[in-house]
Length: 324
Image (cartoon, rainbow, N blue to C red; front, side):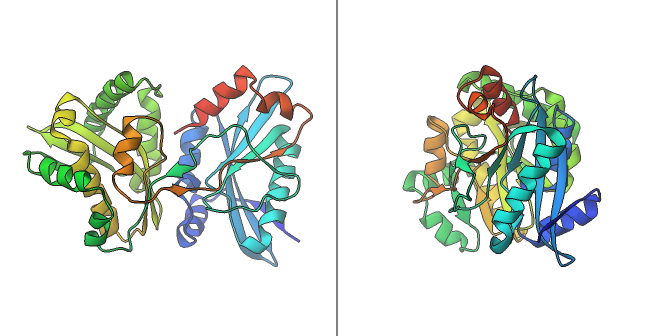
C-alpha cells in the first residue's frame, strides 16, 4: 500500500530528484517559479514500507467556478514502474480531495506509457511530445556525424566569425538577452511572459538553469537558456537578433552548450520540443532521429471534464500559461 507524504524540505526533495534521474522541471526551483506566477506547487513522495519509491511535483491552477482547479505534473511523476499505477491514482485522489481538480494531467518523461485504467490520452498538451534528444554518452565525433552536413558546416562557419561564447551571470546581461528574446518573439509571432518571470527562473533555479550567450563586440547577439538536472539538459528559451541571424550564431552557441553540459557529466540533451517552421528545421539538423515522448494523459476527476477538455476558452488559456 502506497502512502503519500508531502515534502516541505527543498534539500531533501532535490537530493532525491538528482539521485534518481528526474527531469529538470521536477526540481524544487521550477515549482517555486510557477508558484510565484499564479500556480501552487505541491511535492509528494510515494512511501512503501518507509522507503521512498517515487515522487511528483504537482502544479495546481485555480479555475473559475464551477471548474475549481486543474492539476498538472510536467515530465513526471518519477516512480518505480511496479508502483506507477497506484501512485498515479493516489495522486489523483489527493488533488481531487484537496483542490477539487477537474483533472490531473501528466506528461511523463517516458517514451512508452501503458495507460492505467481510468486514464486517457489528453486532447490538450502542454509540452510537445516530439523533440530531439541527444545521447551525450556518445563521443563528440559521433554527435557531429549524426548531424546534417549543413549543420556541421554552419557550426564551423559561425565559430570563425569573431564571436565569443560565455555563460551569462548578471541581471544586466540577462536583460540584454531578454531584449533579444522580445525581438525573436515578434519575428516568430509567439507570446512571452513578462521579464520578472524569467528573472525568477534564473534566481530560483540557480545553478540548475545556466544561460549561454554569443557576443559580438561585447554585446550579446544570441542566447540559449537551459534547465538542468544531474543527467539531463532541457532547452527553455533562446533567440537571436539580426546580427546573430546574419552570423548564424545559434549554431556555434548550441554546440558550445552541448559540449559544456557533456563536460559537466550530463548524459541527455533535450531540444525542448519541435514546432512547425524554421526553428524545427534548424533543430532537426542536429540528429538523424527524432524522439517522441509518450504524450499527455489525463485522469478525469469531475463531471465537467468534458467541458474542460473540449475547447472551453479558459482551458486553452490555462494550458498556454502553463508553458515554459
